[in-house]
Length: 268
Image: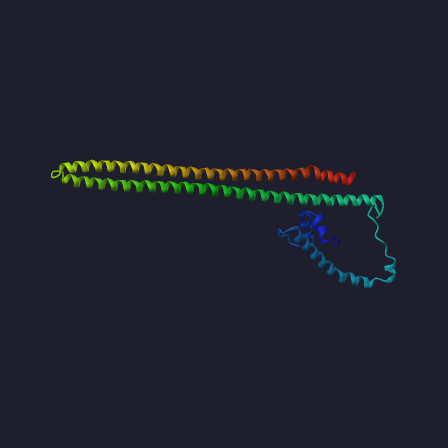
């Protein structure tokens, strides 16, 4: 194993690393590429350490003449030697570097798209949750206002009924003495009628004013809730538009900028 940790991570796909791990007897457990590369390097190091004693014993048995007469490894047939400084060597280096860039770019694109998709989903989920909470709060406020209105009407009816009963009792008491003081009773009865009328009129007027004030406050609250929901919807559309624009920029980069970069790298 002559490759370094960085070379294993950048040059090889996860599937290739898993195949290499199986060759060294390393179990793949679904971790990241970096963890898999570390396990491969550790297994290769142990295998190399185990093979060193056997190689040392074999070297002791070999004679000096055999060591001197050892031939240098020849290149395989059909595989031309490109050298280190020639044009073929430079072309081979450029090809290797191009493959490295393609693999690295593919990995970066995949991870970037995955992270961006995850962020957009999280944002959409949070916006939906916020919208539901706003609708729930608005509904609670309307329900609370309706309950308060019903309670006010009930209290007003109770007070009116009590007043009517009191007026009736007073009239009954005055009527009981009408036989003795008819003139004063008639005068008092008229005054009571006028007073009852004023009470009813003032009570009705107060009821109308209370209802009007409550309707105005409810309408104002509804308008505020609608404005808040509208601002949230506008902000949501703006953020989604930005996310879509960013996604289009990523696609444009994948479709144009990276291709132009590779074209410039090859052809200048």
